[in-house]
Image 1: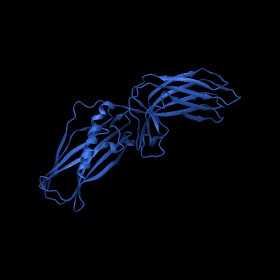
Image 2: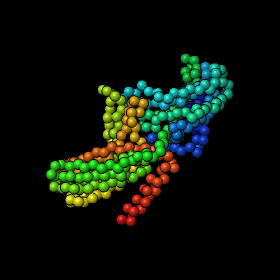
Image 3: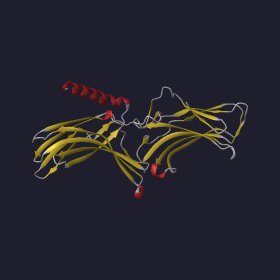
Image 4: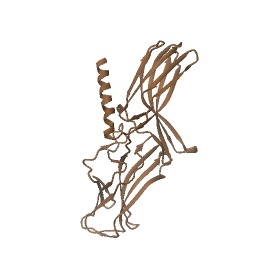
Length: 319
């Protein structure tokens, strides 16, 4: 339940139906000050109630009460200007005078929420309901906004090819790397192998990193930011010809989002697996490969969770 106080002590309370049982999470898990918000699915009905409290012994004259459901993209470099891709409005009350607390039900049935909520480095995509009690100019409007999160679930892809690539330096280094697929659920495991077919340079170690690349805006106002989600060493010491190094990365351990492609023609978010070889002279040889991340339906999520659990057990047995 959320409340907002006006200048004269008025208060607006917004409550979603089934709010106590509804899943909740933050868009910024690493930020202790981030809001914990209720989660809705893409075509789910958004309904609830609004309570407008009247100061005891006073009357509140108004020119109407309305509620809006808004989906919005905000560029951080252009604060104050918003792009609304979804905008619905419901009239809750006609002009009149409040002499006591009033409660209004609202309902946006099966409303289409086309994009998943996102809070990035230069852009955010958010959904919220806004209640406005319109009053005259001297009194000022009473306004309350309440955000919620939208998640977009997808069925597993019918085709999910493996990734196989050969890279190297002529007559010095020749490696082949393989990943088990190109599209991963957010709780999935990236499983791969690196084969050393030719090694004539002194390799010191090998690193694996997952990089998130955000592109926001367009033209001269386009901002490209890369963020390393995780980086760790998968090999220490010089490999020999014919050696195979296994790779296993649990995505559920990290704060990753689905891949976003040209959302509302405003921004994109892509993920890459970056393989880096470092020689004894600190020269770095790397190869990036894009992967696609998606949010699975709960029923489709079990195989990935079970696979992760079995892999963790296997790792524990090796210790």
